[in-house]
Image (cartoon, helix red, strand yellow):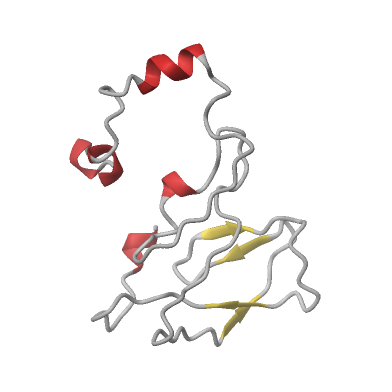
Length: 126
């Protein structure tokens, strides 16, 4: 299981930068209150590390795909249940924040396929 940890751990030198010691001394210096825009290709916004801040708030406010050649089929339409849970195409439960306004109550779902992919492999998203 150790090898399956996030590949980000290989790129963030936490020990060398003494991140743990810094956060113990300054626990509130973890990016709270900052809004950062990231423009990149291949960002997996479903990555667990990108879901919640240290205060439990969503890290991603919005995302855009600037690749004009990408077409995502969003013909699957679903509605949330009484707990505001939407079942995604992978079967994963998605909690829809109550402040998201959707007058129709209908959510169009789609999954982005990487270049060369011909089918969705849901095991990545579970």
